[in-house]
Length: 390
Ligand SMILES: NC(=O)c1ccc[n+]([C@@H]2O[C@H](COP(=O)([O-])OP(=O)(O)OC[C@H]3O[C@@H](n4cnc5c(N)ncnc54)[C@H](O)[C@@H]3O)[C@@H](O)[C@H]2O)c1
Image 1 (cartoon, rainbow, N blue to C red):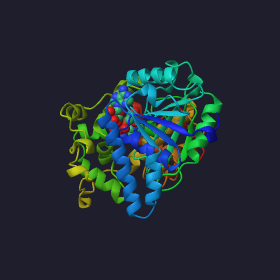
Image 2: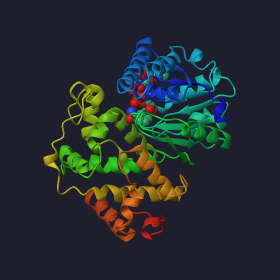
Image 3: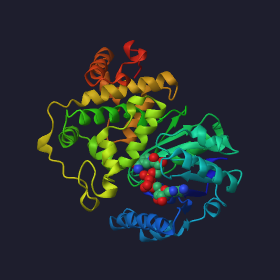
Image 4: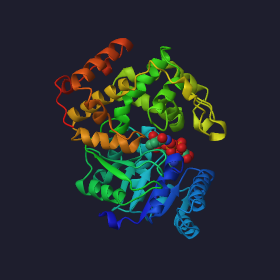
């Protein structure tokens, strides 16, 4: 199938990501089948889509006519069978639980037309395993949008072990044509199905580092966020955890603990917050308070002078060299492109660390590993040899 043949897309799950991805697809003129397990969740997803489009009408970015056309193309479903009956493409955006996703892929495969491509918006999990649950693993891939899809440009297009070139190309071209509220979407090819793909994998050691320095009482999250925002980032790392949901973050760390290293197992503070349903923005309180869903007030005067953002960059570069060694992507420049478009930074980690020199980056990773007692931070052979082109 070619990108231009894709006209009807099912979104499986109408939550934060499902309704946002549905908006981006609706803006490209697609017909949307929006599915969730209960009518109230479908209605909530549709209401959020409409409210978000209405804000664009108020700002005169789209017309009221565009809004009614786009919303007129969205149909709600509580039967998965019916939701995928007439589609060309499906994107699953259900909770980050592999067994649940496998079940959904089996059911989509049984009911979708034979030509349809089936994608998962999983943050980290195995596309290959989802493909195995179907009779069409060549047409199964990962399509990873970032939160919120109407603002963030990156879309990782992820190849599972059996994904065909045709599926990769059709998907890449489909999303390369789309735009969100800020501008064109930026798809990046991920050539190997590896935990966390590019963006989340590069940030996996950062999450572990932030969890550990907080757990070991070395920092105050507000002071770290103030420091990171003072150098131009629109959102600090602890606020980002709250924004995405501490449940989503914990599922991610549990998955990395299983697939990458036991060192990723959730920190005690994170487990406690999840037990108490203190999940961040979605519950009104997380690491910070989110009054009525509004962003937390970060006191910029508290910026931590001892927190060096280059520690994070060095850990990201080291992780990037692991992706190069594993063949997940072919170049440091592609990793930087993903990091710029999936996050708020104007530069990727390789571009930022290049001036420091790879021997210094290597030394820094060794020092962080020793200080926190985490082996995962030890530098790779590629980094030690300075074998990085950028
Ligand atoms: N939130 C983020 O920042 C983010 C970013 C990128 C990717 N993701 C991934 O997107 C997926 C969805 O995350 P989210 O943040 O939208 O979660 P969410 O909790 O906001 O939404 C999940 C939706 O799935 C529905 N659901 C539950 N069981 C289902 C089933 N059996 N079939 C279909 N739908 C079902 C829920 O009712 C809910 O509406 C996850 O895989 C997550 O890892 C999340």
